[in-house]
Length: 170
Image 1 (cartoon, rainbow, N blue to C red):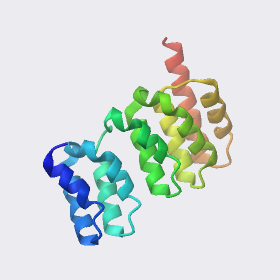
Image 2: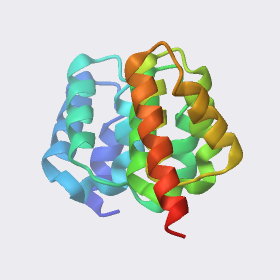
Image 3: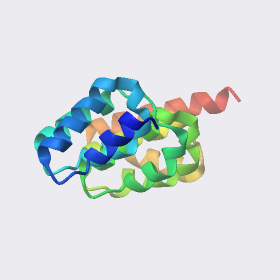
Image 4: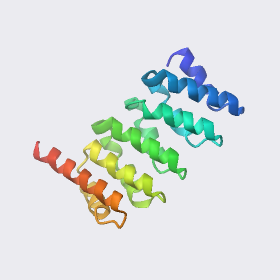
């Protein structure tokens, strides 16, 4: 991590909201260069300050996949009580694709247990992206495909189809 990004990451947890806002904005402006700040940016989506949350979210929208070394930390964050933190950690795991296959159980837990419908929906999407067709993943997606939440059911069905195609091509 270069010195500029290290300083911005440190500033993301500064007591001053204006310092945190400026740091999140600058990380957003760096685009994919701020990839190494993915975990602190996800944490910042749970900031008490709305502007910090908005800039952190904007940065994550254009970030692309995180560093593979962030996988385990993001998996732990996938079940965070703050739905924004959980949503973005799951999104980044989905962007990692097959590199996140080993943390599928964390996504299954989010799919089955998280209180936020958007987090459960994102978990279904991510499970389809990571390509882990283990029985517990398939079982969770099959259950979600019958959910009363129409969007969740559709995303789970799509994930199942994607996993089926991946299995057929092996």
